[in-house]
Image (cartoon, rainbow, N blue to C red; front, side):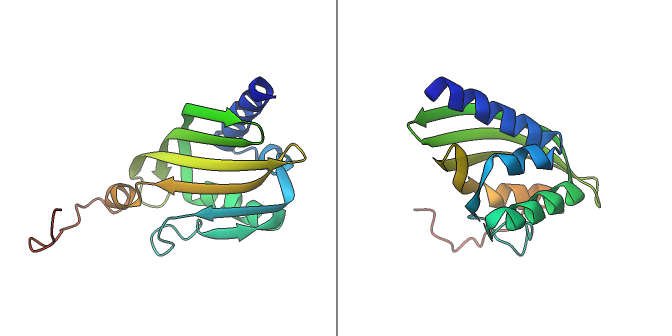
Length: 145
């Protein structure tokens, strides 16, 4: 199961990069829960989604806003029906033309050979700086430790 699940995940990530929403949605359970721990004011396509219709909306919104130039699993740990994947991603924001390069971590749980839960984490601070083309000022009084 471990090898088969690894191969399936590689195929899902490749399909996502290429915009093959039907392939990605076919890999999702009807009851999928997607949670991205990312500020939705900056990345409104992310956040919390439920069900295949929520995932379909997420996929369409992401691909409408960004050209995905890279979405490659760098590290993958698979055990039974669970996986943790670190992804190297590079996007181009369609409206501004700005490039965003970020590492994304996914924690996935499978049921009936389909993704039933996907939790995503990324360096949203760094991604936002790249997206807006600026460096955010951190107050000097902010404690470093």
